[in-house]
Image (cartoon, rainbow, N blue to C red; front, side):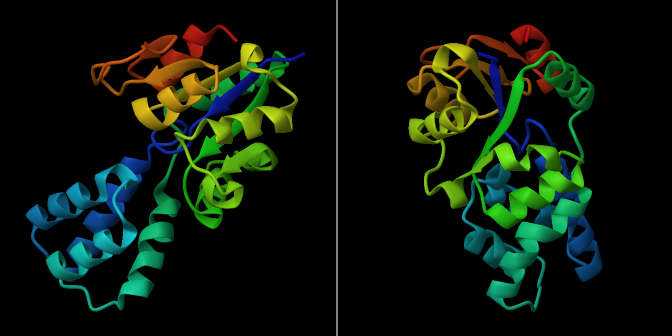
Length: 213
């Protein structure tokens, strides 16, 4: 049975935070808002974990935007997608891993439309049919069920499967609960405690090298 590599999307395959920050700065400049307001919005966003309604309210208040809340939430979800890019060194590594016969999949939280747009934007739409997106799955990380479904779809077992991601809770602990080997993209952070990942490194490219897939 071929091994399976599951990958998180935001801040693992792609630098979501850099894209979102660039978009917020662009909106702020257009609105004539102070630079300090951008940092406040980013704090509410919390790397995408903040409630979208709260982010919209922060942008309306801090950037003095007149968009109605529903329209602004839609902008928050989709306009930064045009700015996303693959993390450095990722494309070469996942293509080489796939060439070695490893099955690839994405396990990500978020809306189906938004996350699918990101995969297409960075040229990974071939993974979409193996993407497990929380909105469509009806279950979200760190629930181990989402990892089990991704394995079932690929015909893999925990012994055959790795999960690589940047969130210690959603990606690593969730995958550990499903019995997977794990690779943590630390982004320079220290491990927060609990059972450590199988491997860890500051960047996605380095983690993929350590999996030896």
